[in-house]
Length: 605
Ligand code: SER
Image (cartoon, rainbow, N blue to C red; front, side, top):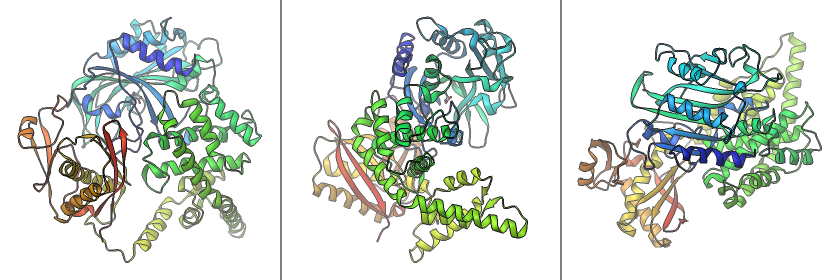
């Protein structure tokens, strides 16, 4: 079964169970500075899982979500891990719970008209219990009723059998994970399960029973409602259905692998090279999807832009290991777009942007990588000589050396760490951070420190842009009219992006007026205040908001002087003076009747 068929089958199956399909959300979480990328389909559903709001599509939802998990970056190289992947998920928002969730999962996995997997090759894991939550006896009972043998049920602690919260607080709970046997026997041996025989079981699906809220002080409080949040790895299940052991051999990857073979004249089946092939194939998918998400992220030295840079530079380095010296990222990206543009048509829409950003980053790093690698080898020779002279075996690369590779040759710290690992060495990260800090200070020297909080970090930037978004919203209403309504907001450390309803292109004068109004309010140094009230009170008070049923009983209203009043969950700066200078960088159409503005905050002069 091809992946596109699997994607569709999953959605169709859940529709027969009363689920509504919701679109995949962006890879860059909206207005959530606590995580860089969407790691699971549940991210955008947090307010609904918490019970604060009702989802407009109801209590049963299903989708295919694009995800990136950078924490798995070091695992890339084996047969089953990728950092970019597609997650098929279904949710019960305070509707069905364990019994029905497990029933449905089992039916999809083993039902003849669905996946029809051999039930003798399935094992599961359940939560063992600890001081926060009890042993999951219910799930065990339900699995036994399904006919699963006791020795196919493993029990693990929180480390493995608990999911969430996605950030540091929020909905989470024990889970039950489903595994498929990938060992060499026809059938798994009697006592084999994910605990006794871990490497022969591939995790394919996870049903999370989200009934707890992890609070800021680390406690687990029962949620008002019991939810189910599941995630099935599309590539892994496709791999099983296609009778493969290696995820990189399924049809979503094989054309990429073939292209790398063609460019490098090396073989994927050569053990010397297989890791580099996999790193390149995984990372190019991730890079293409980040760039193609909404053109919001380009390679840079902070946040998502830095992750993107690491991906691209690592592709280039592993390309060199395979002997590829010419520019090749755009060629691979073309292949990725070809495979993935259906259903991810944003890749086709943003094709030129993706290709040109990849080409530009490859151009930049292409100039320095070979010298940098030579410099690294020189460092190694230096350590070797010191070793011979002193008899003391070096085991660490000094921070200042790693910083030289970063600063002069553009080697992300993680790349130097990878190079170091290959030589059995570590990098002095603290030393690196110190050099980095000193360098930052130097380049700031003379520049006035404008913010009370001292050094800004990326989440400060996001918060400032968030406050600026409120001012922009109000200024647009003043300049264009009260019909202007927010239709979307997306903030990174670099810029805000705001979608709103308005039929025409803004004129230059209108843009200038909006900027002037926002900058005027910034200069007036309004304190940002907030109060809590009911949605009715908020409406009466004139606060901006979408007064439909998505609000709970109380809402928070943020105001800045008498200029702006808006329902929002925050966070915001304390005073508008912290924003600096507001500038609109782009105004364009987003879709019919919707305009899109990008804007930045610059240092005030
Ligand atoms: N959030 C859970 C996971 O990522 C289920 O979707 O496994």
